[in-house]
Image 1 (cartoon, rainbow, N blue to C red):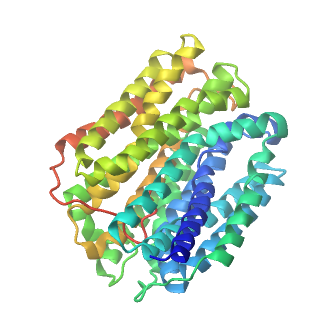
Image 2 (tube, rainbow, N blue to C red):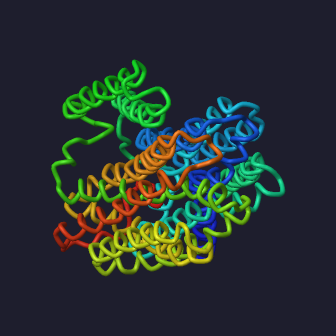
Length: 470
């Protein structure tokens, strides 16, 4: 390969990883600002759940559709559009004068993120056909995604104390614009030779199902679980799911390939992805109130307390790729689940102990989370033909976002059940339940990994539409 080709490939990795940072960091960076947002915009805890969930819900709903969009109209074009949309959403969030406008801004951000994720990794996959070089590029993509998601509270804490919560969103504007400009100037366009046709009906049904589920979980405590609005939301979600399955089975090019769910390893991987990302998102949402309301820290100090988590996640994310390449996905997942459970249990045990005692549990939790992204993808793909790797990978990515959505909605609902305000969480009443849920998520991963068969096939690299690490 020529020097100019190496330089071009290097810039491609830089641009895609910069976009990946923007895409993943906004999945967690807003958490640390929630108490300030609650005070300035007079928001209840359910509104704060929507501030975080709106982003994840939009991302989860649109990921697969956006992958098809990138394959058909050009990955470079969609990546640029994603960064521009993300920038517009960041501006809308920053100038919001009401929680409703802020949630709308988060939806726009989520749409931009959904465009970035599959387009960026598709560009990497197309630019590095050689297995070894692709593996290295994807490793950096995955590591950036894992580290930025875990480090979001640290970055947010640095901004909130001195510049206010709006700075969390203003900070994304120059990054988004820079990524868009670099992509436009430096990247070469690529498209799929035979892009998959769109499935608008499947897209609508999936979005309705996820939105109804999120609404019921978040608003159930406040409206009443038997209230007409919640009952209607549940019914709409059930109807959407019942309609989605047979429609996708009959569709020649389905958005959700239901037939893949007949493979045990694939289903197991999806459940582990949901559990792992539920644990992280639940912890980051809980962490905001735990450290700032219960422990009395300011936003910056609370952010710094999660440095061990981010450090642990970054360290093991870098190690995981090599272990997975040697066929140790099962062992890595078992270890991941144990560490997530130990970290969550440790945070539970140190809840009333001196503040310094939480450092080790945060680090252990981070070690566990950093191990999950690569082996989950490999486990999902191990029993499927290579021709279906793109579809399978996009579903793994969607499962990760669904896990985050459930973590935010579920943990927030448990906290809200204490009947508290958005700023004062009665951990004596509800803290044990939320730590128990996070611990159970880690144990579930361990049990599923222990029960899964050892794969004899190594999967190097990922499908063109796998938003791994997102």
